Image (cartoon, rainbow, N blue to C red; front, side, top):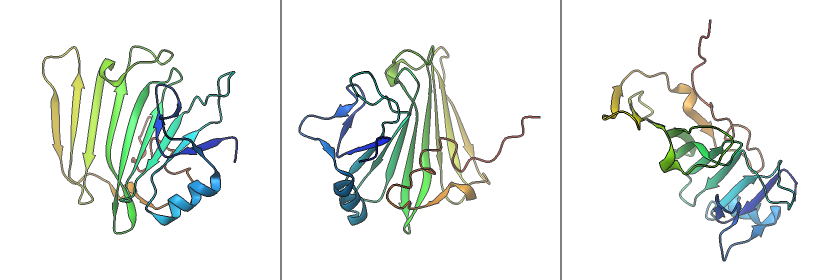
Length: 180
């Protein structure tokens, strides 16, 4: 099994280990489950580890039997800072819902409910969508409805097993931003 990723059927972000009753899978077992389209697997970034060998992932990909995928991205302290849900439409993946969490700092572990700000974006292939911006110190949540959003880049061909690069890009499909 490559040292930079691990596979399981269910992973716990608090313990950073498979959930009780689950185990690490061999690459062959994970490959079979992924290719069958029936197996649920989680791909855990294990490039960085604690002294005891426990992974400190930057990201974890979860695939489901219905073709959908969820990618969780983590801060250095272990907090989820972004979730991206991909829906399966006509055999391709669609960057459907993204939720970004802002915490007091990046070095400590926070639960999602401890976020100072949560931005939830949900877009459809027709270019319509909503953005929900919740600043926890503000009394109201701002919700924006949009149309004609440039979403053509939100499509992703289902990756081959082991080719996780596009899914592990937290900015995948987003239009380039002009920072000048």
